[in-house]
Structure formats: structure tokens, C-alpha cells
Amino acid sequence: MANDLDFIDVVKRFGGFTAVRNLNLTIKQGEFFSFLGPSGCGKTTILRMISGFIEPSEGDIRLGPRSLAGLGPNVRPTALIFQNLALFPLMTVEQNIGFGLEVRGMPPAERRRKVDAMLDLIALPGYAKRRIDELSGGQKQRVAIARALAVEPEVLLLDEPLSALDLKLRQHMRAELRAIQQRTGVTFVYITHDQSEALAMSDRVAVMSQGCMEQVGVSAEIYNNPETAFVASFVGENNLFDGRIIAVGNGEAQIETAFGRLTGLNPRGVQAGEEALLFVRPERLRLQPPAGGFYNTIASTVVGEVFEGILVNISLANPTGAPVTLTMSNDGEVPQIREQSPIEVHFATADARILPRSITAHD
Image 1 (cartoon, rainbow, N blue to C red):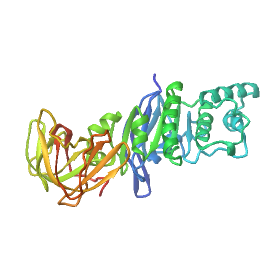
Image 2: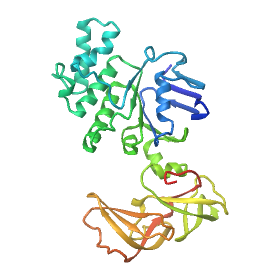
Image 3: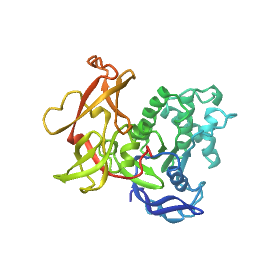
Image 4: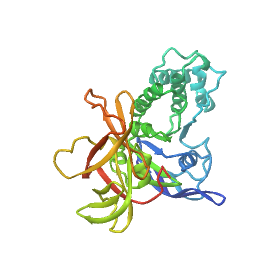
């Protein structure tokens, strides 16, 4: 039987507060799986339940055929990398990596061979005698990974391990982590509030909000086809148009907004008369109507422009005050657009999603 990690009706309460609600999920053996969400959404509580530092209030967590109930952190087939890495500063690199092996009673010669193999895995051969304070941030990250993998866990748990790194190093370490996971085949469970990390590295992502799993799927599904207003607003940037549904049919809906009537896909089946939200990504707005198919047009006024190197973000006036942004690639063809000038932007009906009202990241 595969060593899938199964959550069965898992609930975790702290007094009268419910941190995790009715979690049912299977993380497949060898999968890189991320829990994504804001602070306080329950993702770290899930990690602590997997590792054995806390037990579920209800339900069960199973690894393959085995329940993990009652197993302490020291005997679970898991390893945890903390946000602060928790490396031993007075030990060398090889002593840090070999610490868990020594605790388990592995003979010195075998331990050295294992440490050398781990150093090769993390591309740090020759660093065995280095002190931890002689390493860069990225090298420390890799040593923490090697120390965790040295004890051959069935599941490696990572609690926002890249959050303290600068942007370029973070992006580099994403690729490193993903490559190490693919080489070892160990199940990785990753906790983050950084959506770009989750989308870039994961086989699948679970988006969490207030203890509930809002959506789980591959990165493209989460980004392109959000199932709830929270997911649409939390993952990536989105333009939000608030209004009331005036017509439905053929998998689409029409919504009356401050910009007039707009049409989008209706995946959740909102009905005429309901209040709802239309979401469309800034990069899906166009200065020219999209070729073929049905599209929406918004007449507005330019209120600002932000240059970000590869992208140019143009802000539009919105009668409701909510921001509306058009994002264009800096491909040398971005037109000169003056502030306060009138503008029309367009987006395809197929690029807009109309979803029921719920808590959003902007509330």
C-alpha cells in the first residue's frame, strides 16, 4: 500500500476556538504538497498535528495503513524544518547533518558515508568541516534540508523555511527544494503564506481560510479557476466588480456593476437577484477587444501608472473606489498613457468568473 498521508474528518480546537475544521484530504506519496493561506488560517496547526506536537481533537491522520494517533514526534516517520532552521551554531556542518543519525546509534563510519551523500545531494561537497556561521543563508537552508533528510523520513514538513531570505535567494531556493524533492521522492508538506512559492513548487496546493480548506488543486487550477471569492482574491492579483446578478444562462451570468452590465462564467451557479462578485485578472484586461468570442468593455479614466520592470500596471478610476488595474508586459509596445485621460479596456467573457459573496482577502 502506498504511504499516502490521509486526513479523515480532522478537527483541532483550542478551548472554544476551532483552528482546523473537518479536514478531509489525501496527500499522495512522493507529492510536493503546499498549504497556502494567511496567518491564522490553520496551516501551521495542520503541520504540528502531522509532526505529533499536538493531537487532533477529532478525526484521524494516517500514513499508509498506520494511524499516527498517540505517536510522539520522536517516533513518527516525519522530519520538520522550522522557519528559523534550528541549526546548532557550535557544531560543524557534518555534525549538524549527522546529529539525528548519531542519536539513532548509527556507527561513525556509516554516519560519515551518509553525511557525504547528503552533502552531495545538496551540492555542498567539501563543506563538512565548515562552521554554521561561515555559511550563507542559502547554504544554511540546504544544511537544514540535509539534516532532515538524513534520517530518511517518509514525510518532510517545512514551516515557511524561505521567509527570511531575500527575493533572489528565495527564488533560487524554490528551484533547489523542488529539485531535491524530485531526486529523493520523499513526500514534502510545505506551509507558506507566499502564493508564488506555493504555485511555483507544488504538485498541488490547498488554500486555507479560517480553518477550512477552500480549494485544493494543481497550481494552474487554483490560479485560473478559483472556486471561491476568497481564493480569487487571495491567490494572485484580481480586479473585483461588485454587483447583483440580472441574468443567467449557458454557464454564464450577467452582473450589474458600477461600470454597467458585465458578463462572466458562472461556475458556482449563482442565480438572478443574488449579490455576487465578478473577478478578472489584471493581465487579462486589454486595450484592444479580444479577437473572437464575446467580451466586456469598461470605460474609465487613468489615475496612475506603476513601472515594475517586466510589467507596467495602469490604475483606472472606479466609481466605487475599489482599485482596477490593467497589467501589460513591458515588451516595447506599451503606449504612452497620460493620467486623467479617458480609456476603454476590454476583457473576454471567458476570462471573468462570477462567484457568490463570501469573505475575501480584502475584507
